[in-house]
Image (tube, rainbow, N blue to C red; front, side, top):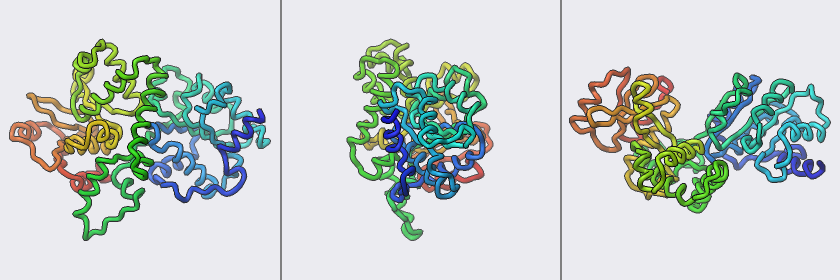
Length: 396
C-alpha cells in the first residue's frame, strides 16, 4: 500500500502545495455547469471522445473547489483508473486507502474524481455502495458511451451526465487568443475555414501536430474498440472508419459498407455501433414513425471536423459545415426528413426545420418540399453568420 501512497501523491499535487493551472484553457460553460451540480448528491458523469479535455475539466474543477469553495486540498482526491498500478485494486479499496493516508473520518465529506471509470469491473455497484453509505461527492469520466446504456440498474436515479464535445468555433478562437474587431468581421469566415480544417481537439488546436490526431484515432480503435470488443482484424476497423468519415453528413447503408469491406451485414452493424459508443461518430435517424426510424438508414456525423478533414482531405466544405451545424444543435435531438427523393437536413425536437446550404441555394423542388413541411420555425443556414444568428437562448 506504500506504493499506492506515492502514486496518489503524484496524481494529487495540491496535497503538498500550490496548484498552478494558469496556462490551461478554462471551458467555462462546462465548468460552470458542473459546479452548479456540486450541491446535489448525484454522481456526475463526464463523457466524451478521448483527448477532448475531460481530465483538464476535472483539474480545473479541483482548482475551483480549492480556491473558490475553500475546500481543504486533502479532502479532494483524483485518480486515473486506467493506471496499470491500480489494476488489482477495486474502486472502494482505492478510496479507503486514500482516507487512511489523510486520516479522514468516514463521516467527513470528500470530493472524488475518478477518471476512466469503465476500466474497473463492476464499477456500477461500487459507485452505488459509495453513494449510499459515504459522505462523498463523486465525479467520474468515461470515453465510452456504454456507461449510458449499462443494463445494470444500480445507478438509476443516482447520477447525472454531461457530454464534453470538442471545442466549438468560439472556443477555438479563445484558446488561440484570436480576437476579431467589429471592423474586421469579414475575417470571421476565413478563421472559420481554419477551424473546419483543424477541428476542436484542444491539444491539436494548439500544436497542429497531425500525428497527435492519428494517434488519437489509433488509440480509440485499438483500446476502446478492438481490446474491449475482442476484434482481431484491426485493419477492417480502420477501413470502416475511413468509409464513415467519407460519408459524414450522408445516409449510410450498412449493407453496402459490408459488401465493400467483405464482411457480413451483422459484423457491419456491430462495428458501426462500436464507433458510436467510442464517440468517434454520431448518428441521427429519419423523422417519422418508429418503424421508419428503425428501418431507414441513419445519417452519420464526425465527432470532430479536424479528424474528418485529416482522413478525407479538406474538401466538400458544405459537408463539413453541415457537420458543424449538427454538433451545435445536437442537444435538440434532430432527425432528418426524406420526402419525394429529397432530403431536408434537420427537424429538431422543438420543431425547427433546418436546411444547411453552405454558400448555395436549394433547388426549386427541394425548396417546394421545404416550404410544404409543417414546423414551428424554418431556417436556411448558409454561413457562419447565419448560424450565429440562429444560435440564441430562445432556440437553444
